[in-house]
Length: 308
Image 1 (spheres, rainbow, N blue to C red):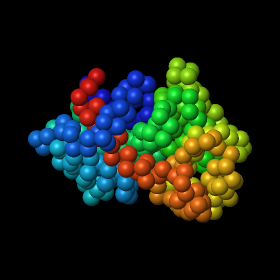
Image 2 (cartoon, helix red, strand yellow):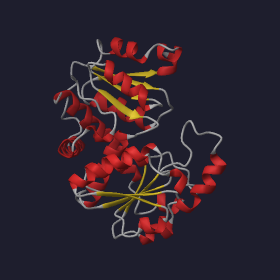
Image 3 (tube, rainbow, N blue to C red):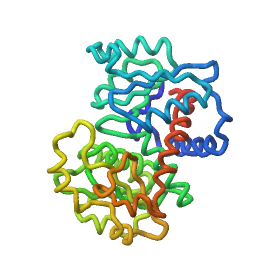
């Protein structure tokens, strides 16, 4: 059976560290690893618009010696209602791995159940695990390690980024704080799973409704857009509730020395984050965006070379 990466806790703490170490090695020697030489093909499917995911996977697969097959799912038979499992059975006979940026987590779970090759979650409504691998690589580079550091996410605590920070951060031994309005709390099941992981790694997870308390002494402050794809039309009500959680200079001043600013982009300056913070000296968002390339190359290599 292949290994899949559908949510952040599909990697154990030791496995996550292996992937991050490999990502650092690939960043240092960008063209020195070619596990897809042949070339082998990786299917990269998109149900949602994309810039960073599309570019980083296409470039990364090519740098690994492979051929990226980028598919707009709406122009494929998936878009006309073909069962997900049938698409998986077609792809698995021709590609080395499947990457999918889709909506419901149930869709990518179904793809993985039917596939004999690794399936990677490039984003779902529930999780964004490839982004958080890149974020962990970025924070580790800034602070020299992850265990015992504090990462605070401000915004929608029920979002895919909040969920992935909880699971991925707990796996890394981080103290993860989610600062969100009461009506935007994380999924209870995800919060419980992250707490169980943190109990074994020395990390912790906590939910705050006071953003200033959540930012105090943090080593990393992260945010994301307030209205995600599929939530169009809710901008007014969401902005009113989330405005106190804007990542601004006042909150950055509460953080610990050397605190770094994370945003998975695209950013709306003046909404979830101020321009002064996003473009300021604490921001590592461009390193973070670049690290999508290295983290995903490492993940693909790890999945292909270490099957279950």
